[in-house]
Length: 392
Ligand SMILES: CC(C)(COP(=O)(O)OP(=O)(O)OC[C@H]1O[C@@H](n2cnc3c(N)ncnc32)[C@H](O)[C@@H]1OP(=O)(O)O)[C@@H](O)C(=O)NCCC(=O)NCCS
Image (cartoon, rainbow, N blue to C red; front, top):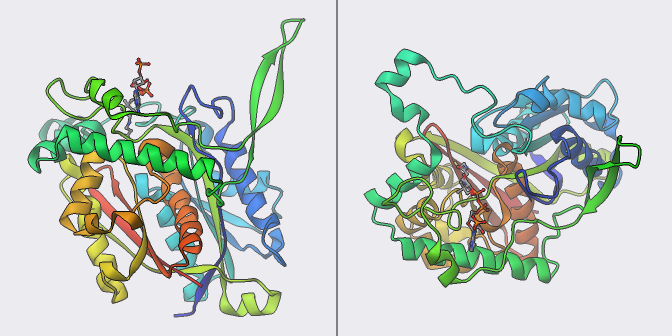
């Protein structure tokens, strides 16, 4: 197999569903902007050099439909020759897209590709606009359609993850995120145009642009404040709005090139995807996925947990993230885990998350001068995914 090098990896800020700063900015606008910016910011690269785009999206319908992988490239002003597909592995869609884009280059089927992710949970809510479980299958397998919050409660109760531990984990996520924002450490974020429709004197609405620079879900948080929150998914449970990931809008893009093209065009590699693993688990406790996917990826790469400098483990819920970190012994290395916070503070824009965490992982590896990073997440339906990146 050939080497496939990452030459760019960027993301938009993540903004809260419905009440956030992207609530009138369509997903096509977010993703086409970050795709175009990824090309513009890559020295010696032109849009015509990209051969194919893989775009992750967890609910590819309505505003996110019509094969956004192709449409967004066209909206970004890329030439007609740049093809595109939309791929869906729910919360791992963005990472799946980067893996597929890397594999095309490794196989020799493409020279330069883009792996990206987008989700506007404002425009297309989780579950889609018309959820329609299969009637007979749903009656015999209700767990296949269970709410993600209930799976988080199941992990908490089955594996004894206390409310107090979940809240402390959430507090840390918020604290690290605020510190990173205030310290200017989110170097992977691109200030992104957003839109709002402002009513004019004559009653018509004018589309006005403004720029969003930061993730807008980071909030001042205390342990007392978290402890007061009521549980959301089960009366007697422990999962609250404060220790769950936020529902969010965002987009991210990574550009991958063969070694030959890097040499020919003078592109500077910043990293590579070493390996990628997925694995299934019980759907009613889907949050345990990373506990199985991370060891599989490490084995494939011939690495151990001690070799990993940066862990970006998606905080779908504090209960499942904590469970996985503890089971794998990664909790001994918390100074390497989600060093600038995770989805509890920064949001989890479903299909974008894998692409977003890839950009964050590469930026954080650079910041700590590390070599290997892991991006991992649990996946609705009962799965885990893990990608290992090497900084070059
Ligand atoms: C949990 C969830 C339902 C909460 O949604 P929400 O109600 O819109 O969340 P909000 O941000 O409005 O927070 C609810 C309340 O908690 C409070 N709150 C949230 N975080 C807080 C914090 N860190 N500290 C103190 N209070 C907090 C809010 O102020 C709000 O209070 P209010 O009702 O008095 O205004 C939603 O975030 C969710 O579904 N998350 C999981 C998403 C998911 O399943 N993803 C897929 C995973 S596989």
